[in-house]
Image (cartoon, rainbow, N blue to C red; front, top):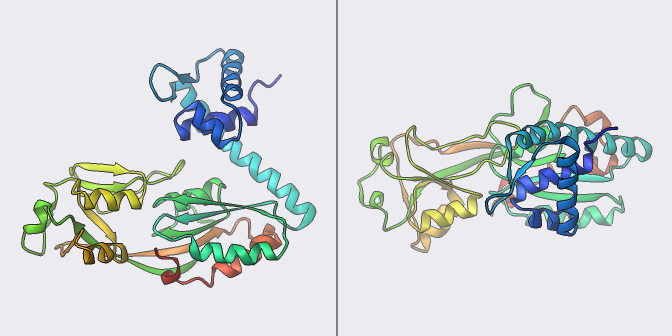
Length: 303
């Protein structure tokens, strides 16, 4: 008898992502005792410890990490199979996942969702936030069907269709009280490397995480998203590149200074992307959604 279930894998995945049994229970809309029972039963059946409960966080053991790594492939396959079967039967998706880059506002997408629900597809929509390469990872893993704001080059191997939204412009910004604020421009790498950078953590689960604007050997403060990066730089905890609209907004308020740098990387292409491997199986709901999203402009999406 198979001892490992899809349900158990979903529970392990939720605990690993949320950091605790209680937070996982909340995300799965279950009581904590049900989560605890699922893990304890699986550990007994497999004869291995999956989580180390000695600390404040629920940390995966080495065996648990391997189980989750391989188990996520099974989860992705199971979800894809379920959706495919239902889509074949009805011609309409039961679920659509939309990943939005954390540089963008939800507002423009929510306006489209208003019209989407008025069509009466009956499709459930899940909107998720992704950071940097996580926008591609969400497509690759199958947790999203459409990704808005996928940056730079697609992962190797192809399999994606894209529409260029435009070029995102970034500028180097520091707090007014930061030591770099007083140095003459342009700042060179030898000036910058002596100070901590702030980086938003790539939300990829399967793809190697991407980094940008970090010098080799530079100290880095890693934060979960762009909003946190902005706040950390305004607090003087570090320096780094920010989208020009965000940087200018807070520079006008006296909370940041935009500095010229000698070796800047200021433009980054960003795309709406979707898997072309599923295009021939795309249902009516996703076709409608994609057609509307492709009409969005970069200015409409930017916060």
